[in-house]
Length: 453
Image 1 (cartoon, rainbow, N blue to C red):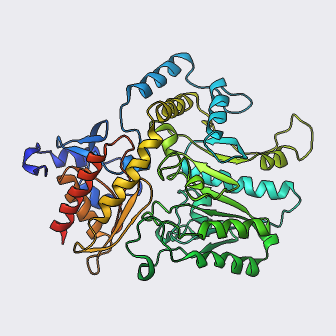
Image 2: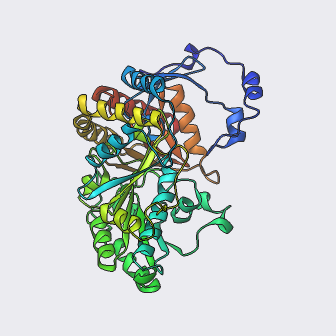
Image 3: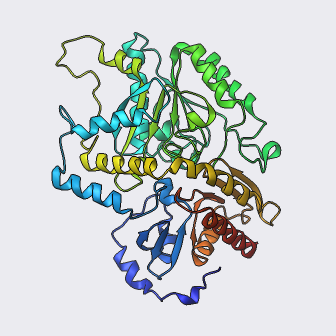
């Protein structure tokens, strides 16, 4: 049922503008925000509550971060107990015992053979760490000429220098050209609406686009290429699903030429694709996987890289005296004990509450619901995979992104939250939402679109 704006309390905008004066919001049009602030005051279960008193269904799981919903008392208890026991331990030269156990536990979710975990604090840090591991691995093997990295157009790999270098979203790159890594090339993205619009799940067209990797190998020579990094499903650019056979071909080409394959699973890891990782969903095993977000349910920052054991062995076994550091990389908060406790609690909930089985149900429910909107005015495409979906909307002429922003504002008035990327709307509801809640969420979104067009 539509929630009428008149039900909500009035807010003193001038007071907010003054309060926000010192805060520079990330990935946000700050000028627009200050005229149209969106302030959340609390969260519980699958809902946020804002300063107008509105209850908003969290249709984006925070920033793809909170699949278990908000405020689960088991998470709170785990964090509180760890704080009372030990709030911090230096990340260099020592570690907490629970961090060892967490690393082992994570490897039980990853494909066989990926069994060494390097902890960081975010997806961005995980990506830059994976790129450094790739360079260190080839150097340890005596192949220091392998320095080139290959990303993909429209790819998002975080906001650090390595990530924006291999990433393929122009707006993330255009201001920072002088800082970016040299020797980076990009594969074409796989979205072609003339061939695959309104595909349900994986498109059947487009596997041949993987052959572009062979062209880049021919251009640069394999002896100069260290790694290819891809999102199994491109999330931040709007849920671009790989064509049938595409990832398999990328894997084969990398194996043929001795190139490492990195899957950036910061969004797709831990259930978003109704599987442990995208690697499982598509049956393609990379050499490294980056993760973050859902590992702690977004409660506390944590991320990491899971690598093949032989990669670890090559880097740590390069010789020299054993008291010497082999890999000069890490962060003050790597494997933080409170983040570790949050991760254990999140995995406990995944396992005790049968979350993965719930994602398989929501995969079908969300897919059926979003594609039921096909044919409504203003929709250029609908895509889905696992518990994620996206809509491309007709833009307003000469004002890119305004349509998406207007739809977001209307969604909030109707009691739902979505993610916007320009004029693309993404959905990623929590795994703990009921099928009825997901269906109602998409139905409400359909009403928003009818109003918009």
